[in-house]
Length: 121
Image 1 (cartoon, rainbow, N blue to C red):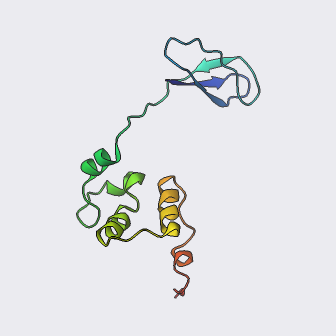
Image 2: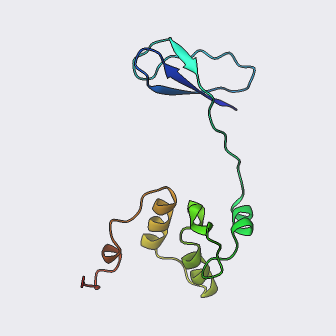
């Protein structure tokens, strides 16, 4: 199920079009201005990996992690997840949602907001 990308010749915005298969006809219009004057772009592609595959490729969290370990956002919070699992504890929902948000690219405003009893120096 490919996703094709087009550049509008009228407003210059980029539009993505989902197709059910490679042989499906593509009827693309600009999502911004409705123009049909589109030029197809060469787009990047993604390779799916399982969480286990990512973990095997990047190694254990912590001081033994390689220099590229945290470049993969799926590794954010792995150390905390591992520690909670080792202690047999459920991760608090606030911690879980913070890790999930960070993996999606939304970093917390500041660490002090996560620890209300810590004062700035």
